Every structure is written in structure tokens, then in C-alpha cells.
Image (cartoon, rainbow, N blue to C red; front, side, top):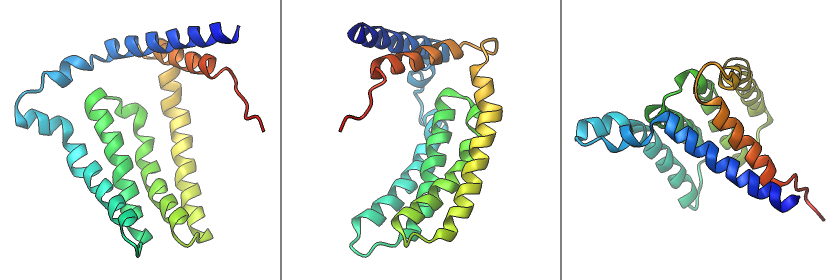
Length: 174
């Protein structure tokens, strides 16, 4: 049963991804981009948000004397770049907008983790992260899971059930 569950889970993941790619029309709009203006119009978040975010992270992790303050704008730009690039390619601003709030919490959390672990940072991290989660859960997740709003709920459901079946409910064994 365990092996057949993983096979069925793999099939459901593959079907879910294929249906989602078909319904999102990913390949046609992305590969049809020919001129530089259209290319820049579609991939501006990678150039102006992701790249500077990665540069901030690289400058923090490559130096021997590290300044954790670099991670705040780096984390914000990194998350915003990923959100905006995803939305430029696939759409979905109405679902992913809470991640804009989360980007600030992510930058501050990186400062907390790699900095001096000042407990005062946990307050804005908790507030912004909680607001982001609350907004995502109340507005975006309910919209994503409605079956009558579009062709996305069934493929996402297939992928989720497939991942559960593939993982097989494994627990860490000591």
C-alpha cells in the first residue's frame, strides 16, 4: 500500500502540474516574447528587485566583517522580487498581495537571525507576519480553494494530495 500510494501521489502531482501549466497558458506568453521592450516589461522584477536583493545577500555573506543591516533591504527586495516576478509571469495579484507585507517581516527576521538577536525585533516581525498570514488566510486562501472561480483549484488539490501520498506520512525516526 505504501508503494502504490507513492506511485499514485506521483501521478497526481504530475497531472496537477500539467493541468495547472495548461490552464495558466505559461508557455505561449513567455516564449512569444521576442523584442527587448517586451522582455524587460515581463522580467523587470528580476532585474530591479531580485538582482539587488541577491547583491545585498552576497555582500553580507561574502565579507569577513558582516553587517546584518544589509539583510533588511536584501530580504525585502528578494521577497518582493519573487512575488512580482511570479505575478508578471502567471498573474495572481489578488492572491499573492499579502506577501508584500510579509517581505518586511522577512527582512527583519533575517536581521534578527543573523544579527544580535534583539528581542525587540520580534514584535514587528510577529505583527507583520501575523497580518500577512491573516490576510492571506482570509482573502487569498479562500479564493484559491473555491472551485467555481477558475481552473486552479483542482490542479492545486491534485498536487497537494499527491505530495501527501508521496511523503507517506513519514515521521522522523530516532
